[in-house]
Image (cartoon, rainbow, N blue to C red; front, side):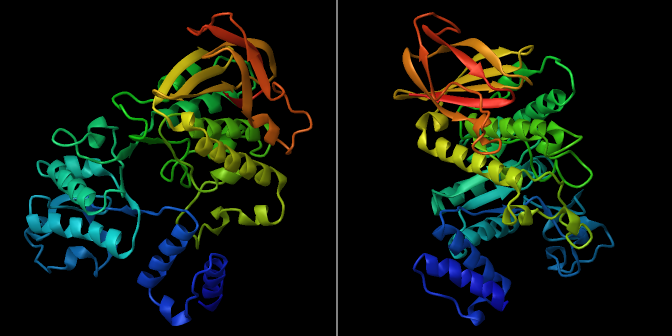
Length: 438
C-alpha cells in the first residue's frame, strides 16, 4: 500500500495538489475515488462498465440474488429482484418492478454523484430488451432520461447485439443512449488485414470496408463506437491481436507493423468514436486474460516500453501523434463524410471528411499494397496546395530513413476526378495511411 500511495502522491504533486495520507486510501471505495480524481487531473475521462442485465447465480452467497433470501423450491421466479431467465451464470433482473428499476437507476446516479465518473458502458443491453421484455426497453428509457437530467454531460454507451440504431435514438421511439458499439468496421478491417497477410496479390475487400466506415441507420457520427479489437474478441483462445493478424508468422515484422498502423490509423480517422483496446497503442501482440494468476504470461508487455523496444516505442509515437492530429483537425471529428474512391485490386480506399457548413476538408488515403505505388491520381475537394499532414510510413524506425511519400505536400490541378473538380498525382507508400489537409 505504501508504495502505491507514494506513486499517487507523486502524480498529485506534479499537478500542485495536496497529497494523501495512507489511511485516506484504505478501502476500495476510497481508492476508486482517488483513481477517478487523478484521471481527471490528467485529462482522462472515466467510464464505468456496469452490468444491469443480470446478477446473482454463481457470483457467490453474498451476491444480490440472496438479498431477499426467498425460498427457491418453486424456482427462481420467487425472487423479489429477478425473473427465472438466466444469462451468463446469473438471472435477469425483473424490470417490471418499480423498486428494481429504481435500485438500478439509483446505482448509476450514485456513481455519477459520489465517484464523479464521466459515464457508463452498459453490458449487453439487448439482454435487458429481449429477456426483460416487455419492460426492459422502457427501463432503458427511464435510465437514460433520469441520468440526462442528473448529469447532462455524462456519456451513456450501450453494448447491443445485433447492432440496433434505435438504441441511440431519442424518446419516444428510441432508448436514449448517446452511442453504441458496432461491429461492421471491426469485421471488415480484420478481414482485409487477414487477407493482406496472405503472400499473394489478391484483391482486398476495400469496397466492403468503405461501406462499413459509417454503419447503416446512424445519422450522427458520434452515435457509434468502432475499432479493430475489443476485450471479447481478443480474449485468450479467440481472435488474434491486430499485429499477429497482419503477419501470423511474425508479429513484429515490417508487414505486421505497417498493417497494424493502417488498422489503428483507419479507426482514428474514420467516422465514429474510435476505440483502442489495451496495448493496441504500443503494438501488443498477445491475447489477454482476466485470470492473471494462471495467465500471467498474457499481461501487457510494459517492460518493452521501459527497456526501449524500438517497434513498440515507434508505434506508440504513431498512435499518440495521430490522436493529436485528430484533435487538432476539426474535419476528422466533423459530420461530413464521403467515400471518394475504392479499388479492391489496387487495395486502395480514399475518403473525405469535413465540418458541414465550415469546411476544414481532410482527405484520408489508405493503401494496403505490398509495394509503393507511384503516380496514382485521386480527386481533391479543392485546387492548389495540399499538405501531407500525416504519413504512417514515417513511423517505421522513426524517423524512417527510407520513407516514401509526397514530400509533405501535393498540388491539385484542374483535372476533374472522383466527382471533384481537381486532382493530384500521389505516391502511395506500401501498407500506409496518408492524410491531406489545407
